[in-house]
Length: 209
Image 1 (tube, rainbow, N blue to C red):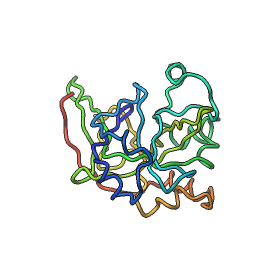
Image 2: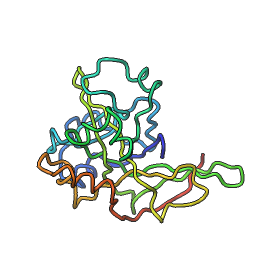
Image 3: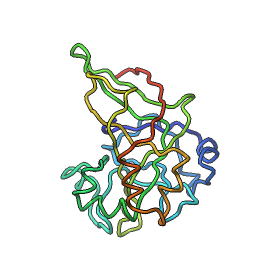
Image 4: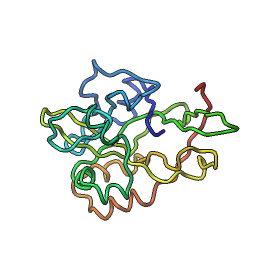
């Protein structure tokens, strides 16, 4: 989960699920393993354009930044953040108020240490249905979008003393989609969403490491 997501949804499935068109349909490709350490783009819906599915580079950079993504990530990995980081880090706090996004996936990865063996698990919805996770984004000087996943505490279904991490992406269900993307939503309501995660169901399958 720390550095990998999954999105195997077809273009049609993604557009039907979120009832929005892809802005760049000819460049959209499903990807079983989205490795954030390799500067990859992921499908997102932004506050600035909530009527299209666009794309953002996973790993947020400062607003209006002109530098190199890889060099910045070597200094600070920004694939994920959480409510505590957002409150105390200049990279994130303004973005939560002004530049929220939905990151569209079909799953994320988890890792466990079991009898000195690292086991990898893919966490998905039933039938690998697409869903959205909370994100924030910044827009670079050249117009490209970079984004980070907002994490929350791991839920009871996924909790285990064998887990290597105690966090998971914060899901934003369809019920709260418009609230999350709206400029009219009170900031205290946004803080409430990230502090009180929506309880949801996932299925977990072990995959070859």
